Image (cartoon, rainbow, N blue to C red; front, side, top):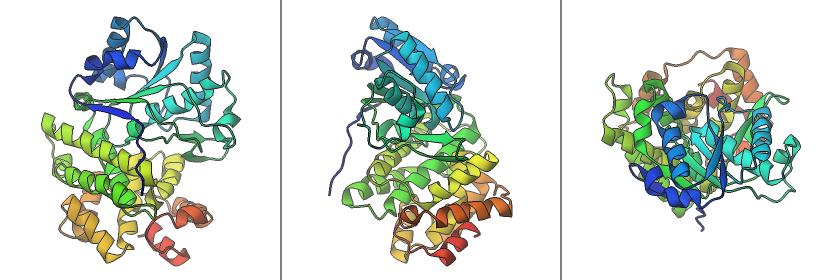
Length: 359
């Protein structure tokens, strides 16, 4: 058994300011990779800029990262970073900016912007130092080496083969207060999917199951507030973020399973956000699991039974309508991917896969 976690994590209020010296120690000039506005609105961008200025570090900002970032966006970010002479990268936001920051740092290490390098597994996995500041509560990207990108040439989403872990993760739940309720719900469902899928992975062992079960328990304590109309209390936001970090720690060891792989088709073809896209297949996947595994996930998350889980997912996600032809596309794509098909502790053949997809 092994547990690989090379990321130094600080999870506390005002941690960007408190640990500014460690952030500034990563280099002389930072490329900040983020989206158009959310990092500024929640205060994370301002905190990072202030920390860098007080530490005497220069920085430039690439704020063009879209939801489900494309390879083309990564190339533009790397080109800017190289032109500006940046020697470390800071990703601020949800999974998209943090995943983008890792890929940008990988390309910048090569002082060029050849997109083919991203998918060349023969290249060494080295990158400029990366720091991550999450502002949503689902991805866990701040503690994983994964970078999921959109490839328009293949009409698909998927991870690059290189595992690029941040050197430093600065986790502060106060940034969640500015997130729209729908974002909190969608990303929290993603966190639940990470935790459940990691626990169900064929790669799971005692060391990966420990953060998965711990995260599911924390997640279970906040799931009801996701359906409420009032704003979550600070302590609830704290638990949302903590569950997300545990989910990232778990999948860093095991990867994800079928719900994530199937969800990529819904996101690319229909624009369904990542969390709901994974959640769409999650109940069907768990239904096919062995009773012991299924009950362990339900118990840890505080669900009385499988029906209660299905009801929660329906209420939280609104049961998005997915055309039959898109489900068929997801089914056929996954059926051809034999390695991913058997990633979980569920024996999946064509018949079982059809039940999961068309549940």
